[in-house]
Image (cartoon, one colour):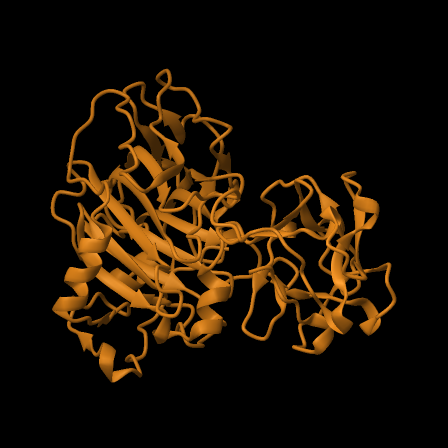
Length: 461
């Protein structure tokens, strides 16, 4: 689901991140968690990658290339004929009433080219239309979780966007979402504005809802701040997830290459942060109408009779870069055994590469069937060229685990936790040695996470 702030957050509990004043908008007063000038300078120096300033492209310009030491893991410059749909390989539609998204928005999202189309000059246009009081608009997401920061590395996700005009109720957003449970599996809002204010906000969502360490459903955010000219021209909106020091990870937001907000792992705790951000996420672009954030910002109900139809969020490009590979293929450990309860090893039965082949516990023997690679950016476990997978994408206790073609689905996400467990966000369960078995050949399963010895797995180093 997509969550957006609906009420003022409580003051931050950490005096090292004391709030600084920002504009108050009705019931949506936000507080910036401050950071030192030295930290800001260090973060900016570390993240001035290919962040660029405002521009006004008129053709399908190439996406900025990855700097030395970085790799491009996703990009789209929206080349194509005027009026055509965006690339189906890169984007899929979320359709249906805005009420389905849990944010109070009132439009219906469609896959119509009236709402979502290429303009023929290298832009994706998402347009909100008022059809006699029935609003329609568009929401696109990458089909899979395409981008994550590998342990010891960085992820930058950036887009060049012109925000829409139109007045009260407009709610453009460029953001990322973790697969599985919300908010514990993470959300990073890279750009939001409401009510055509020419402002920008960056926010994370994590932990539990309501409340929790991330103050859901508000999240931890910058609050709305000035974004001069953001309705009249293209500006770059970026975030950098920095896992260079895996004990002190950060997310920093940039407007036209200038850092304006940062959140640190220490603010929410290691376990919460790992579950939310130490894995791949989907990229989403959407233009909502009405809802909690616009209503809270104006202290009114939006849209109004004065809200203009046809406001467009125009996107020149979207790109994601990492410092060590990325997507499902970078940042992996060396191959080796995954050792579990009773000293048995995770094993692909019979070394078969057939889809649905059972994964079991077995006497450790160093065979290829027991050589697993943990791909940190995608949080997947690979053996014999395939992935550790929950059968049928099941979520119930006792669902068996098998080997399957790697497909970037939530059934193949395994997040290592501090208690040694391997957590699957979609099911909200952990990889489990069935019935604490020490019998070689017992197929593994998923089960409620308990931190017990039969759910503790030692990954290859």
